[in-house]
Length: 270
View (cartoon, rainbow, N blue to C red):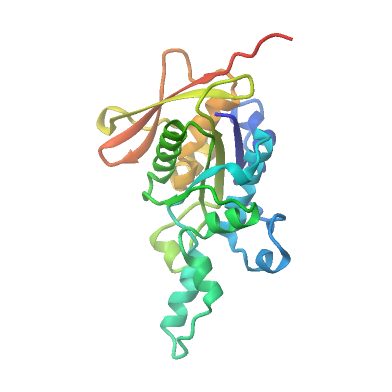
């Protein structure tokens, strides 16, 4: 794994949040601030909803930190919620007397809208996968991105993100806040990588999910599917990977979990 991007409540970027994630500073929860993507032309920037803003923000962080050309990167976008605001407005429109739908709103409502905006913005024709696996969406995305990375022997950009639904959908599917993370995965460890990841599928009954020791981070992890990545991000932020002899467990399917060992890259002395 070569780089990380992060944006969430009280976690404004990976570089800023590392001290919080490794326990050197307290987590100070604050609403996630989403800004228009600077990569997009003005017209598309105005149309971009929260899901697009969030996914592109963390993707930008990870790609810049990896120092790779985003035009060349295959991508995997994983989200349990997708673009809830536009879906809500479309449902309201269809329930009204005037059922005329905006084509732009419809195109922004689909699950792969963030990946489409990203690939257009960076002029990429590389392969892209958008997926959803309910609460296991981050694990599904990580497994897919790692599989593609190894099979193609090429870097892959993984983006995992969730934004809350408006009411009344929020009452049925409450999400704590907008949370997004991104990783650039590479097939081989090198001096430029942060860590090596070993990922295995294990029986969920014997692998309870890893949790965050700080209450506010644990609340975020438990109430936002994309934030299931937090135990892994904490291990990476510590620069020591997992605790000796331990592995992380991330929820995936009802019967399966991911077992992850993160080993920091040992860099040559200069």
